[in-house]
Image (cartoon, rainbow, N blue to C red; front, side, top):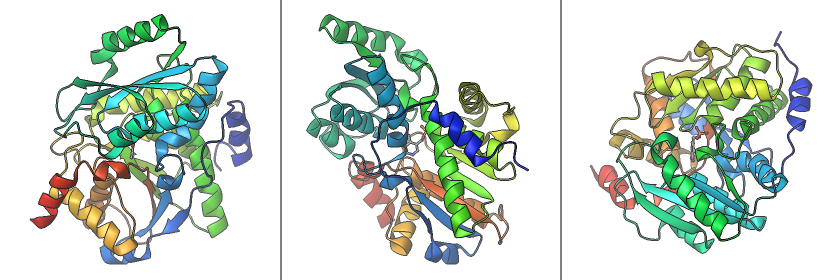
Length: 357
Ligand SMILES: *Cc1c(COP(=O)(O)O)cnc(C)c1O
């Protein structure tokens, strides 16, 4: 028996109010053609790219809780940061605007993409977000330790202009800034509940969930959900930036903070956080041949577009793991499509170059 029932977990999550921003539940669909093509386990996709806010994605689940927190704290501006073509920053800007909150985005040039109005940067511009672009080390996601001074400086400026800012940590994952509870991860415990209910209705027994992992909120939440509700199901996080040792610690911290926030009597341990870091390859946000091929394969077989930074890498990992015999043929795998498709466009040149090879 699982340590908790679905209704117990739902009740715990209800302690955290949220704003309605998205369409739930997102579809859970079987990828018949892809499963057949790979000749391994049955593959399903949880369509969190279809949440319906600003081109969709996992960040909009998180923002339902975070925007509520911003409003409860009576803030009228939100400051956050990430890479130049960040999905998180776009989704934050869209959610903030909808509730009359001013979005201020610190965008770091962590990869070699032009600063032109394309992809998420174009959408940020349409939303009239305040955008500050900064230089950064290439191939690495932004770490808070490196940019704390910059964030504080922006916070001071915003206050001087008479605003009350809310500082939202990157990805809405790690507790910090104005976010005192791991709200992003809590939204993914909720997503896990949603998935289990859907699977139950479809008579589907899931063995693995696999997804792209960046700032840890998605994995932290899913891992807590699995531990609480379905211990024999494994959550596999495909890291897009950090090595599994240091990143694993971060995800574990987020998961443990989530257990605490939800007041669950549950011990999430190191072994519950499964991370693969061998698919990072050239670095964060840097495209490669395997990812380009995975994007094309899923587009051709299923008519679904993945993104080049996150879900493309996670799909390249899934394909490789199937080839290596990691799964049994009777296993049922759920791949979370966490969104990010606007980043296809600024990556067009790299993408076409790889696809031509
Ligand atoms: C942010 C993001 C992820 C990673 O989610 P985290 O909760 O930050 O680990 C995965 N996919 C896409 C498209 C994202 O934008």
